[in-house]
Length: 186
Image (cartoon, rainbow, N blue to C red; front, side):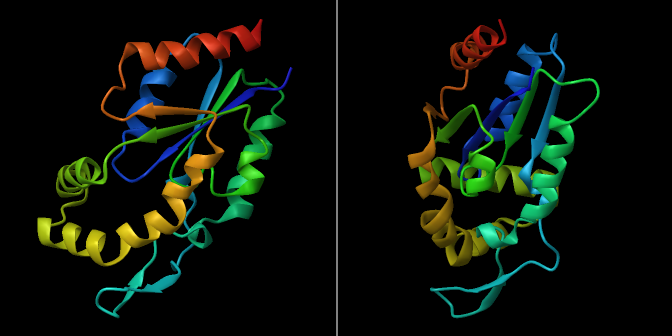
């Protein structure tokens, strides 16, 4: 039996990684793999011109910055393992933007959250995990990320089978997808 693939996406700071981790924990009795699209950036990154400043900036939010061949090869390897997996969770902003990834998914989840709340979470995370200043984070968001998210990431919501509130990623939301998944595995 082929593994069930679940895609989890949303804007930066929406809670997609948190939700993915919660779901993986709930499924720990199964053979599971978690694939994060953030691990498959092309280097060097493509550039964009900020519509605000006219400055050239790294573009982390356009589908062209994803090494699609590499992630698809990785997913193919997971699908063809000798010891098959039960579940593959694919998490990240590009999960529903790339048609070849979408076509592999059995269920797609979009974590929806207001942009102000996502910005607040992004500031907290990037200061703590990446050592950036609030000015660096806010400047990049306002001058680049916000525009690319609106043009690409947030539009991928139309491909989602399920849209969850990023402020309510609790047991009920995990149990909903877990229940569906376990029914598929019977």
